[in-house]
Length: 196
Figure 1 (cartoon, rainbow, N blue to C red):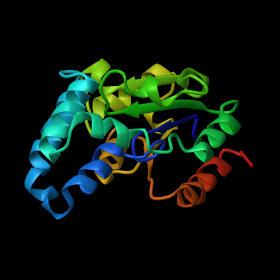
Figure 2 (cartoon, rainbow, N blue to C red):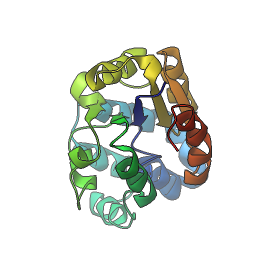
Figure 3 (cartoon, rainbow, N blue to C red):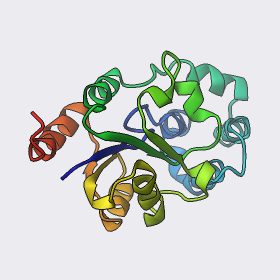
């Protein structure tokens, strides 16, 4: 029985701006810088550098100014209102969580109209706990903090390796490709709970 629904942030709730911008700025040259970009994002995910340091180093890698990067970031449309509505409609029946590989200061900037705590019963950020997906321990930590067993959770992420990590930790999981596909896959899981 599903008792908790846990979301990834970037690529599900919010566009994965880091990799979208890397692709925009570098185009076909992105593979030359992929390791450097991965190492940089890992540092911010573990809380070793700040958000501002991330975008400063990112700007150097892609060959633009930090100001240009911040200007481009402002053009992204923000959180997916359809998922926020889904959360609002299911909060009374399920624990709602978030697990995100992210540095300090990102999440607060995204939830402008309402704080993240309005939507989520618990939020596990990699930079706060020193663990990154797909480490099984981060999923188990989220389940523990939500007060449910891992087997009672469904986790939603856009990356296959993170979905596999959740499954390895004992959760059900959905690889997010679109909102419509997510609804199509989660509805039967919730219906088996008698949620209709």
